[in-house]
Length: 610
Image 1 (cartoon, one colour):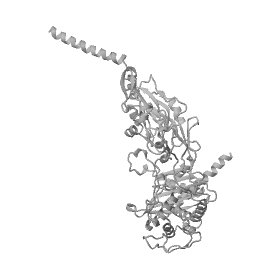
Image 2: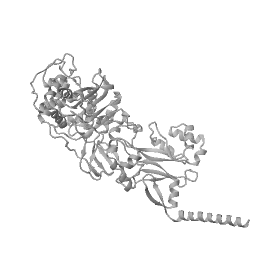
Image 3: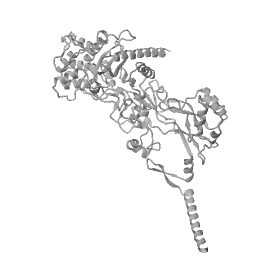
């Protein structure tokens, strides 16, 4: 009996010794714990820090990333406003209907729903609106909340990265979480920088993606609160705000976009029920992007579905151009002297080979090059294409900027970025003739009218007009002019520069003739109905027949400039998958876009005079 008691006593003493030793290790000796299970970076924590970490919860108020501004330094997507954060406190279990009614009346929420929601809170959270953004509080709501004798919530400053204005989403893009991708792409940042880890949100598309490293910032701003042993909010300790302490951040990305123009074009496309397509509006003097709109609207919540059509920026995607490509064919014919201004062609409506015909039944009869351009005569342009070599047509396309991507880029490293910069990484290249050595007349004839293998993007189509307006000088299109510290001092400046991926320029005389031809299109040709607006217009219509499961549908195009006498803007409009028997609505939409631009110019001039 005594022996058994002795054994139990010794065992109990040993167990107590183990517990005491363990307690001494936890309290006295710092232990290495895995501070980030996703990046294998280990930090030193003592037991106090570990205990506080376990009991401290955070609610993010600002992601700390750089903000985007328009050319007038007005915020684009980022939206800052006051909202209300709720905390899980024991007091909510005792909330009365009278108290819930007072709070619900202020927040425009049903008292019973509000009571149920706060009683079920496990962590701090916001009340969300129909766009799943924290509700925006009015000044009156803020005053009324301050008068309530109620704990458990805080009025806080919140920054919505993608606010209630969903313009610009395609060009600016959005952010998301993709741990495997982050760990692979940003390994060096995770290993060396405190504000990076595997769960960091990164740019998924648009400028958010192409400028991701410099946009990342110094880290988020949180409201931090402490829970007791029963996971209840410790009101006595109170909430604390944790934010990076650096007055130079967040950085400001100053774009070339115009907030008012972009928003008005977005609204116009919705009013015209554009299901799929794009509008690009450029500064005619240097190719700067003033507006870029794509439809359907981008839906960030479905970004993981790569087949979702909203993911694609149609302004940067290469499509069949149809007759707007006759600009390239006309330029090549003039450049290489295979046509004269007074040469007479005859269009009977049928080409006589390759199964090619003109869009006009019975044909156009006698045509000069200017006539054929205005009337978009397939027969004349097929004839011209067969006179050219595939290399000549390809080189002219390159000189006009419809082969290589035309978005601003730099092949040299720009500090503080680790390598070269390309602003529009999603931009696709165009194509003319896949085989520049081909002698196939059918391929050349169909290429000359913008069919077969020809592809170009709306951005390239608009920039081609800028090249022509500048006498053949090809600019790369900018969408960002500088990236600045919060105090306005530039970190990176992105100057206007010409394209450097083509071998030669078209002659100024060729550019001059092309302008005359485009003016004839709206004066007496296929777009003669585009008259009577605030500005005179010039450009080229295009209709590209689609094949396969899209047989019976077209791409409708219009690209041009305004005002015709003193060009201020160049633009391209694409409407995808329109019925083959429908009128070219792209031309009408182009006119409406230029009407908006004209109104905007008048308003800007009025402001400058003041």
